[in-house]
Image 1 (cartoon, rainbow, N blue to C red):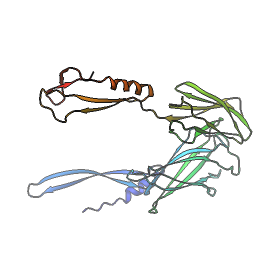
Image 2 (image 1 turned 180 degrees about the vertical axis):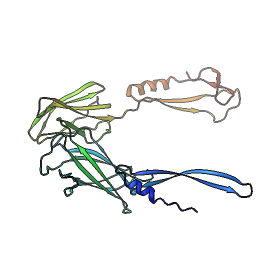
Image 3 (image 1 turned 135 degrees about the vertical axis):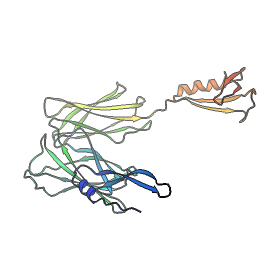
Length: 322
């Protein structure tokens, strides 16, 4: 058994703000005293600042006074997902270097078994001065699992200079028949009316308006037979300035585009040169194709046998269904 002193490597990792892990490479040698032969084995040791690593995946659309939408993910040092309670707080950086204000608690979220949590509509309260485009804040995240292991992370959030619109849906995947609940958020407190278009593969399905009160608005899009595959919701209009602003969100109504073939042979084993017959059933993804497949099944029969080259390096005779 060998003991490796990693204090120097840990101190070097601690001096790096953004780095969370470090791989240290080593080589072990063993010599056979009878033959004087030496074998080598290389391996790596992973150093980690904390037991849990916390990550924040932020949205590109950010404007002062607008709610924040982002994802939080938590993982252990070996890369496996960590199911945790994550406390989110705001820490404003004061204008005086080295001086920070107290943290303001925002909310607590729970990551699922995949180590992911979605955070919607976090409102940043104005501090001593109102936030403007180009300003930034700092979010502090503290994760704890059931074994009381802890992880910390601080993320700097920068706000855009221009107006922006954020479109959010109640989920990303929908079943046929389910409506889409849409939340639209924008900067500003005055009432504003925006246009909402729904497109499916660049085809306009529906167009309507949504009224934003206090920067927030909600609409429900009833299900349509055109809701299939990729469906995109656009919200657009004029906000506080003369610029035309657009926000979008894409959801999926998954479809099965594959033909399914169920093939059944009359025997499990065949002798070389023996004829074989097969029954097959085709299931198509759409209703029309299913009907046609049904007619094909009714017309199925036995045809003449012809040689067919198999993958097992021998020829067998199989009766082909036509």
